[in-house]
Length: 487
Image (tube, rainbow, N blue to C red; front, side, top):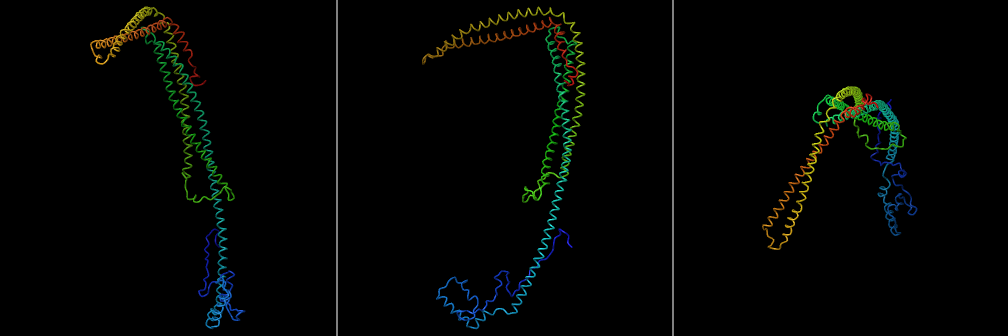
């Protein structure tokens, strides 16, 4: 007994036709005797073959005269014994019997071969149908298993994406706190720099490196150091956020690809033989556009998840470092702020005796400004006085150019006029240079006057500057919650 699906090895033999008899066809025309039968012609009263009465198959049309001549020829042929024997006697009865037996055997052999072929073909069709159905079921099962694998990795990716989104939100919140804390340090830094700026305007003996200035410089350094550390951690947070978002993007791209693959595989899994969307795609089985293997496919997703977990761990560590940094910078800035306030309080009592020394300097500066202004006016008048002589000399040169023909001579008056023009222009240039120097000197004097007046106002209002203005600005130092980023 043969197994279902095995290859059949039945042999189909084709009966050999006898070499001495022609093959008999199954058509109706083959039922006629191969020997032409002798029939009695009604007109000639002789035995004649059937072919004698069928001349129309070979001769389309004959006239009556031609037909009578043809009948005479045939009649002569039939009357000769030798010719009649050649037309009627071709096979023996034994040949006829053997021909029938050969036809019977050939018919039986053909029927047996056809019957075996039919049975084997039906069995082959059934076996191949079962094989095709089992293969299709196995393929559907494999696609189903693949769908389960995709669903598993989708759930893992979804879980990791949720964790990454949570971590990104936490890091973003810490980053915003760090940005707010960094922005809050601008106020104390600006106040310290403003105090240093006002104190830099002191003149003479007031321009000393006292305790207030040292503490202010140290406060500026402390604030800038805290800002620098904050900026470094802020840059790290921005970079880490970019890394987190890149890992999230890879996870989302991976899960989107898996959703697409799951949708395609699910559609393939639900395809049936009666589906409407099936079609022929010749040669598609010879193509192999795959980019990965099952191991590399799962490893790719696993690597994405591991990379995301690593980035989350780094992000969590960075958040802890930022928390420690915010607390440390807040304590440092508050400690130095208190030291500066104590130094300011001590310095305020030493700034009341320096006002009178600036009055004489201011008066002398005002006198020099007045004299410089008078000099500038004199220079401007001298420059204006040189305009008319220059115009006269240039006009004379222009008029002498119009002399005709040979009269246009380069004579002594010409040379003298050219020299006069150059002399006046040189005088004007020197006066302009001196005027510019005088204006620069006046500008410098005015600037010195402004500085002295400003220093005098600082000296006159030293208590106001140190106690009211500087200390009032320093009252706006941010609180500890604001320095750590809380609003």
